[in-house]
Length: 175
Image (tube, rainbow, N blue to C red; front, top):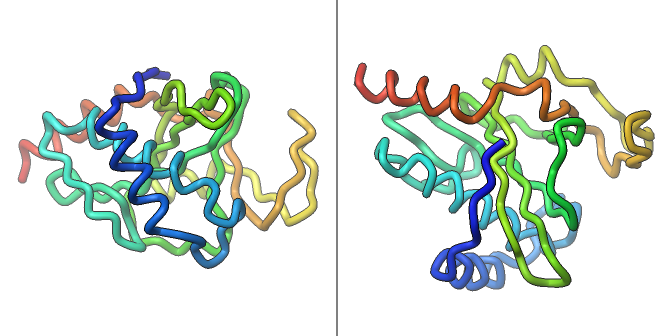
């Protein structure tokens, strides 16, 4: 996992975008997770900028690098993520991306403190490796109650972000 600091300019941009975004359809936190989600996207953009990453923020993906489409999935937390913590993808998600990047934004009260790039998985590999939880299921690992049907995978079972770094570098050189 790679921990990144919060950058003031990104925070100000994310705050403005989060307010403008409002409450999205099917939002678990009724729009209160927008800031964390946008900060996650901006952190991944910052990390892969040297490869020409572009934030496109479509329904199907958030970023692309030389045509490789990434969707960023962010958790809002009060503690730093641990390897046994999980990343989730809602079951209804039918996004046309090639991979998911999982991030965690740690908050102290209402202020973001840090962003962790927790791991990544190709879309198809994620569905093969992840466990399916129905709404109301309780995770045996941590007692988390699932608020909607979703796919869940521990960070330690994901690929490290550095391996995506190398893969995207090779992908960008082929295009």
